[in-house]
Amino acid sequence: MPQISTADFKNGMGLKIKDNVYTLVEFQHVKPGKGGAFVRYKIKDLKNGRVIDQTCNAGTKFENVPLITKEYQYLYNDGEDYYFMDNETYEQLPLSKDYIGENEKWLLENDTVQIMYAGEELLGVTPPMFIETEITQTDPGFKGDTVQGGTKPATIVTGATVQVPLYLNEGEKIKIDTRSGEFVGRV
Image (cartoon, rainbow, N blue to C red; front, side, top):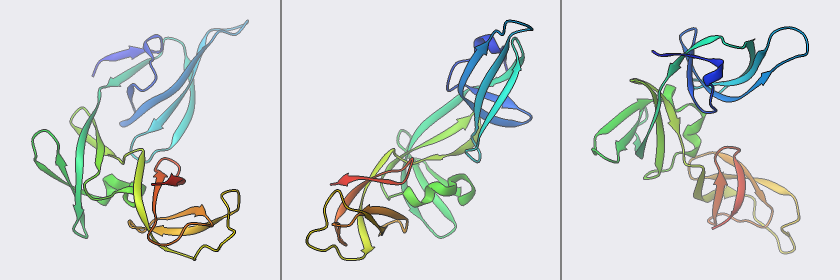
């Protein structure tokens, strides 16, 4: 792997530190009045999603890892593995729950997902930023429940529970932001 220094940092680049692959979230070069320059940076662990704050001396060397993202179509889950199809070659890729993690609650059949690789190593699956789905279970809404009112829990097709406005009922289609799990609007 090619070595890079802190002067070559760019947001989003892949770094290998102690056999783990991280992506650089943000960084800042600091030149104090006294002492040598240093770099303050945040990295995100691509296996578990944790963000870590770090500092190092300016000029420190790191191992650069090329991050490759490919689009796949989510097909189905057979109880053990999740199956995805490469949109270019139509080959099927079975993945265990270890690669899906918390994102399983946002996977809808036939949706396009991003699968990230660090070189040849598979890192994980990222669902679409927004999904449109149906409410399968929630308390009924009542006349007079307004948009400005509170929220209530609702279960969607995938089994995830999200907070929705009081006026929504079962069977209605909604849009959800998968990054935060928040209700965005009706569809």
